[in-house]
Length: 474
Image (cartoon, rainbow, N blue to C red):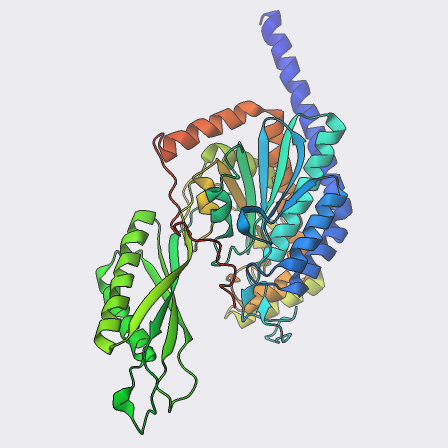
């Protein structure tokens, strides 16, 4: 073996050892601060602010980042609760996403039985943990950059209203990711995985019908029921389900159906989602839903219009980045439950119809997979069509717990949620370090990104040119 090769091998070995030493230092720092980050997460859990209303949650995260030396820009892309926090300058630009909105109607105490805490919303998707863990990761990476004089830009994106409000879409539309080289994110879950992600494209809108009020008994012939319009639309859409691709998902809820049975309602509203794993199919299905609304209005003698609320792309995975994040998740590992937490977990499991909780799942890392199955939607999809993007899930809920459930809210308000959150924070931080240390990884990810997306791709937001729907939760 010649001297050049020997020298290179020695250099690489020294680099690996040095890199592991840096990573171990970051893990120790995050362990020391885990209790403090748990307090932040649980404070936001108690705020439980819905989309575009996350004023107190944002203020807390901004203060945390500002106190650590980040430069804050708030109210970006026309959203008062959206912000960026930046450290450093130049290339590469590595971004970390943070969410913090709660869901309506899922108020719950941190108990293993269904007990409302009488709030209007609850963190049933764990975004209080999401925003906090991402903040923790950003601070840890910043400290590492400062200590080691690392060149580049670290940018945290505070992204509101993921739950139906499509907050990240407006950030993408405004070009706020155009200079970013890679985006890191995560999501709460009931297991630990860093596999290729998938998400359903989604278009959502509120359909409004306008009729004529009248006494429902005394002069029904003079009335034209807006509620009839909504119900006729729903009936037609439900018949349409037989004639769409089987992977299509359509959901609706009547948000206003009138106020009294003896008054013919002159206004009614229904809120629709259309989803599929390809945005082109979503657009086609949504257009058919619009036609159903128009037909319903014609048949009931009412008028209708609709307001686009949200629209998101499917998720574009990046396997180059995904394998890096998976390896770091394996290094970090899962979580262990205390005896008290095991009792809590088993009670939650019983409430879900299981005999007991499969607690070991929380301590393990799921096998690596290069293909993901889509169950829900996320505005991260639009980000992933703009810049190479990678994510993971960590076990913040009792294994087997579905998202958007009171059981998810309950676990997210306990130390179980905090522990899973720190798994995510550590994994994101280590992945960011890898990218800053080895920019050839970014080059490789960019090449894969262009090949998968297509060199001629043109981004068109599914929600059109509407301004942010700041009142969609009102």
